[in-house]
Image (cartoon, rainbow, N blue to C red):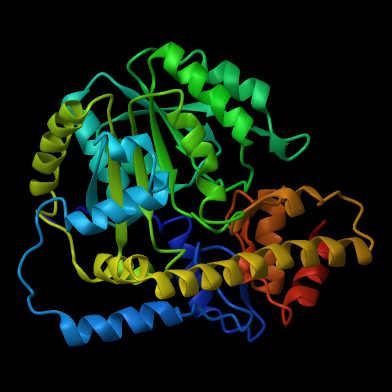
Length: 396
């Protein structure tokens, strides 16, 4: 059966990392894959994570299966992190959470649920969006469409076009929104704009699916949830996919969640029963370790405070590299205006570099950037910023 199989093309992002590893240039720079790096170019293990693991190693007493939706305590803590402890969704029992293997796992469970229970629903993605979004939902059998988002002229949000696009989505379809740190652009709506988005989706009868992969990497833990919470004031049904890969640096532990919000607790219970059927037929039940780490940290007041400090340090380093990158380019006489990069948030920025310029950076300077021009700002360091800016100035 295997004789006729052809080699699949490499992943557009992870494939670049493989090429980067094989590159022999000692000055190579990887600005492609979405992984945080510190000032030394390393992906750290957070001190709070190591302390949580130490406690788990001492105290855990079973390796038995988790429940299908995972540990209920983890689910509650996820909802508190997303919505806030005193939010009506929590007090009214209008939310339920399934622990999924990573944020991507949560997206796939959502896709499988939509395909099974709402087979006529299409999902609308921002243009542009994370490169894996279309693949995940297409693989789940969900039709993928797009709505307007970025204004190429300003490298900012084209909010008028976005609202117009969302206002044309048919009732019963799904709109995927990035809660903060939009990937790949780094461009986020304001809280007021989130309210307007919610009004349009509620009026149209469109279900929001919010991808929340970078909580804490824009302006703060609660600040980054403000837009989503404003959305919840306008709609009474939505899905939220959370990831702890970035803000806990738990990339390889694959720790995420899918949270359901309904108009009533009874409604949520019915939907969760269907989600559990979907999970059972997929990976049966989730891995425990990453979720246990998150639960230990979030339940301990001192550890929680230390974790927020670590998140702030990562966030501040990224924002500092944004400013340094723009300042260095200007100092080198680059005429193109890159100032929008300072206003963007999260690990990614849409640089505006075209495919030929991206190819030249790789071929001439061993600098690896996704073909769309998306750059991972966290890959910049004080040690490589001069070489990077010299190369960008050259290809421009």
